Amino acid sequence: MIEKLEEILNQAGKSLGYQDLHVIPSNRPELCDYQCDACFRLAKEYHQSPVVIGEKLVDAINRLEEKDFYFKEVSFVAPGFVNLTLSDAFINQTLRDMNDQDHFGLKRPDKPETFVIDYGGANIAKPLHVGHMRPAIVGESIKRIINYMGHKTISDVHFGDFGLQIGQVIYGIQQRNLKLDDLTLQDLEEIYPAMSARCKEDDEVRAICAEITKELQEGNEEYYKYYEKIKKLSSDDIKRIYKYLDVDFDLWYGEMDARSYIPKVEEILEEKGLLEDSDGAKVVHVSEENDAKEIPPLIYKKSNGAYLYGSTDMATIYQREQDFHPDYILYVTDLRQSLHFTQVFRASLKSGITDAKLEHLGFGTINGMDGKPYKTRSGHTPKLDELFKETEEIFISKKEDNKAMSTTDRKKVVNAILKFADLQNSREKDYIFDINKFSSVVGKTGPYILYTYLRIHRILKSEDKMYNLSNMVYNEEDRNLRLKLIMLERAIHSAFTERKPHYIADYLYQLSLLTNTFYQNNHILGLEDEVKKEDWLYILNLTSKILREMLDLIMISIPEFM
Ligand code: ARG
Image (cartoon, rainbow, N blue to C red; front, side, top):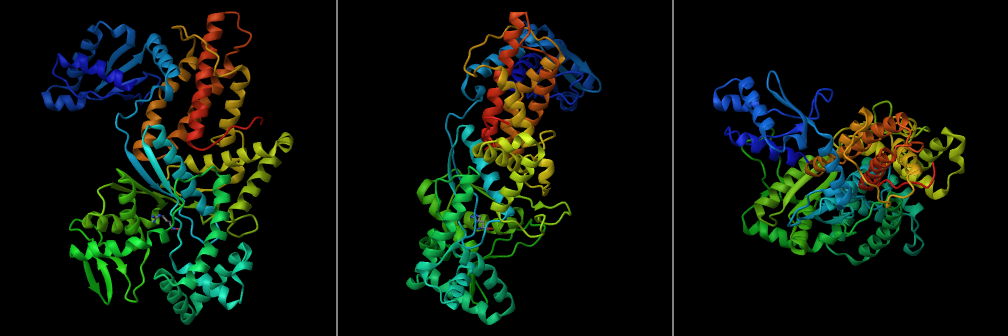
């Protein structure tokens, strides 16, 4: 739609020699719908005042034959804005196009690109807590947005299963004389924190755990049996939680799966002369002249022969390049890993192991009301299961009716609360986790959006019914809602190009607000004017379809009843 407006403006500008005219949504919606701010730039190019330029441009647009089809009004406002108010006919034509086409007429690429998306990243043997929700849901949503845009995605959970925690747990099992066959998840949940604490106090224990980890990496068969058992117990539980959150992966690989590529990458680095000795360790220098702060080298191999996080990440890039030859590899992790990814990306590009574009999509922290990392009412960092339960209890306590919901519906609502709470924030921001606020049906919350959807859905018999849309717009609430529907494409585009689902969440909220205002002020079912009634059902029908498809991009499913 914006493209169409730009086409018209550029057509008018051509006779004046004005090019690259861009249109954006109005900064002042009370004055117009869209605006063009090119006058300031053109004023410099043509050594004329922006007023002269703007008036000439407006004049040229007004002289176009098709002007009246597109615009109700085009005017110049000092100091340099061209204000555009859309005609009812054009608004309705755009809505019809959206309604009749898949993906609401979104322009999709002729040649889809391949994106590997690495998210989730849970560490084997460590229980999942509230902090692990973000990489899973931010990543899953980004994947769905990219698919919606028409590109191909390959998602990989990339379990953390190569680090010291595995050695710690193996040693813990041995110390307790536990038989592998009898090992339970409960055991793991006790052993990991206990061993992690012991390693902090006791260097000797730490050295033993590090040695076990190294031998496992080198292929020690006995340790590998332990590893397999630990991985199975832990990953089954992690998968259960991802399933609850509707998060799914094409590949359930881990760092360990890249192990066989580590020597190959080492060879390439060696050949290219990129590996240097540093106190017995092998490192890759990655600092660049223009770095504001010195970027330390990536340590590929420690002096004891062990490999690290950077080595498995490089080996995994090599593996992905062999398997999929992707155009992009995206990593959704905590922002605090940005130095790590700078090192890995630079070392990978230098070594030529991939020509994919590599992006680190960082996210902020989930905090409690005190601004510190989130804790439950009883004061500990909650495991995700506990968090789901707590959220459900709070939601149920809000209203007598909520007690009667089915288990499936409750699960959907808990998901809506948690996901909307998270995805409404630009991903790099920390946010305060306030379940009470997030589970309310008023305000910028998941339940509010669901409630809006169910409310309008009740009066539509079915979304598949065909209504017709006339060329009328009836009042301001009606017009505002229609204009918001048209803005969908822009929201999806921003979400895709910036890899930020909050544009979708934000759009859903704005759309819900306008839908509710429209609905409250206009009684549809009792209308005698059949054309008007059908127009409004058409609009609500389209709104309902958009709400549902956009909710799906942020993994929120709609309950039967709320
Ligand atoms: N396991 C890592 C962590 O817990 C996240 C993995 C992210 N992906 C990657 N390829 N490094 O921090």
